[in-house]
Image (cartoon, rainbow, N blue to C red; front, side):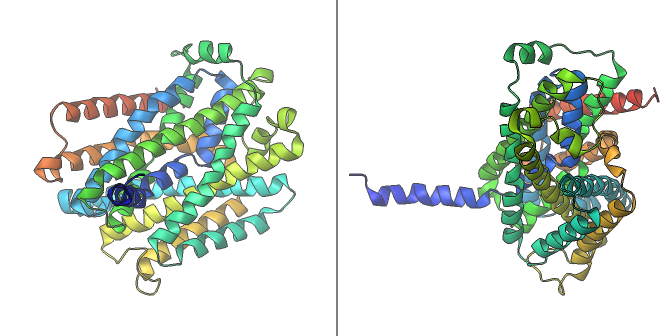
Length: 416
């Protein structure tokens, strides 16, 4: 028989490692938000499988970026905005927070547009779905506990697994998938624009702020570093697999029948599934995925802004504090949620901005990655600092990714 006493330390280590999991998985589930899903769907519709390889290449790049936020959060114990303020001064901290605010505004418009779109699939007015969604998001966070928020976000985000069934149900041709994945039309401005949008859909300013602040708020320590990196790696792989699944589903359906289609709503994307799953099942599966993506991203983006502004301004900020103890923190979060829902209710066609919002994220990459890498070089303890060959790998990869995102976005918009 197995020695139970010998097994106990291993079981304890496993339990401790699993307890560390959360920030990476939550931020990655939020990464596949409504805007990202529509961007991936548009990529599959217009270019078939030609942007699928990029989704896989972005896995290690996404991990490289978010691992730095884990390192900074664990070894400094401070959030991203606070660390920029203490290292480079208030001006640069507020500049970074301004970029975060722009990205958060864009994200919330896409998330609530997706929620409204799901309601309209079932004939429910956005004047009903948007207040309900906003109330649910407020209720989740006003518990005063990071762990409760994290668990709720994971449960909601797991609905994104529906997209794997979507891709399987579309029955893509493996031969066409493989051939299309390596056929890259580098000279096509529309392709470059969507390529930039996919980069912006993967690396977003609010993800950097959220994960570093969440790691600090969860009070993770150096002994948790390895488990936190695994958490981030698993999340990076999962989010890109979801993006790939959406792209494959749309390429095998809408893209095969009407490659000139322009997806502007979740309703149009759900129509891709009806030939394989039936109208009712197709709408339900796709709706669950979109709701999971939109709600978890709305939580993460709003919390990222509340944390980020708090770190720069210096007000109390923690999910471990009750609302009356951290009025500004919860107030900024609530204002983001309510304003996002109200704007989408007033301007019903904002969903068409989804791809543009992702391109905007790509244009913000110089600011976001510049600060992140600089902090990893100058603000960490010497033994944890970004240095040596890996530092140059990070700088080169970040520079190439940024250049492709900015160039593709500007060229696709006709500015270069």
